[in-house]
Length: 199
Image (tube, rainbow, N blue to C red; front, side):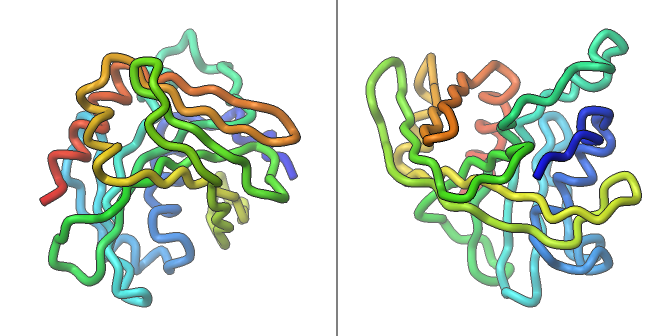
């Protein structure tokens, strides 16, 4: 299943999707009522889902400059996009998570979870199998979508090392193809902002 109209989306649409998908399938009114902006530059948001009694804190890893510049209006969206990084905790009182997840969004849904590896300055830091998360009822440009997330979950200790590393690379490996993501300066800044929210 592909989403060709996503290629015409702009930054404002991506922010809307970003906020909605934080709560997975929570009603839109619930998202608006229980969301909080922790940082705007870079974007970091907190959303409480009362149905799950769970709070998600997420940093957007899509550089706004890629979508606000006229030169990038027709910039194609990659087959798999690194969308955000997030962690969750029970209830509304902040607590230290055991893991942080990188969230990828594919244009075409995966049938089986790909494997992943994370390298820091050329050294393998963590590897394993991703988790596929199906979303429901997400409104984009007046259309209802059921997008998919690919979650790369790493221990908090490994996540903290990312902020100290000069080069970070995440690889997704599957039978349908491999994808490599090297964190840029904007993404590193966003991850630092996310790390600063962890107590």
